[in-house]
Image 1: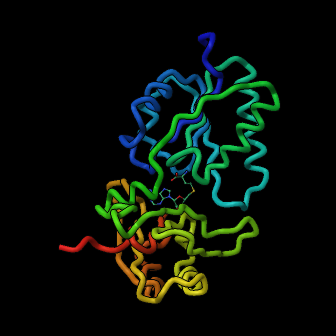
Image 2 (image 1 turned 180 degrees about the vertical axis):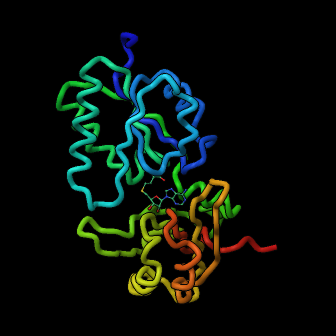
Length: 236
Ligand code: SAH
């Protein structure tokens, strides 16, 4: 390991297509000796670090409480062995990536880290739809929200002109009801993009009142739900 470089680099892999990683992320990955990777990262990224040992630490949601403990322990173990460790996370590491827990686990052992940002799913969906999340004059704020609470309950909010919900794909009908409860009018524009940025990306347009109809199309696929200004089509 080069002196002066932190032993662990967290890299945002982007939303699932290998070419959406940043140039900096790709460079750091190419220098890795061990890569701990998540379920939502593109297997094609392996070509950037064929020399490294790739360890699958993928987990979904909050159901595997021990999963995070195991990941923290692996990070500390490999970094402690003096190996150059990359922690590859889907999207951006700072957005619903439990980065704080892993940083704290390293810090507790006196280990430092670097964080390389990635393209988060909300931005990828906006690019896919060509619908900016902010709009001059009407969209002044954007909120990235998880629809799931730690206890596994569904929760919706109305805290910004554009609200992007992560982790709601399996419960779109229930999300529609929660959006109404949160004060979004029934006719508010909603768009759903699943596997954003990937070759099999799908998108659909709805209203809050009709969001349930999106369930079948996006079933079993990672999806973000954009509500409000950023979901509305541009005027022609
Ligand atoms: N750190 C990631 C988010 C991890 S949480 C990021 O910045 O994007 C996992 C959730 O992200 C999924 O439930 C889904 O809501 C969203 N997601 C991840 N990849 C996606 C993709 N390619 N298309 C749409 N949503 C995606």
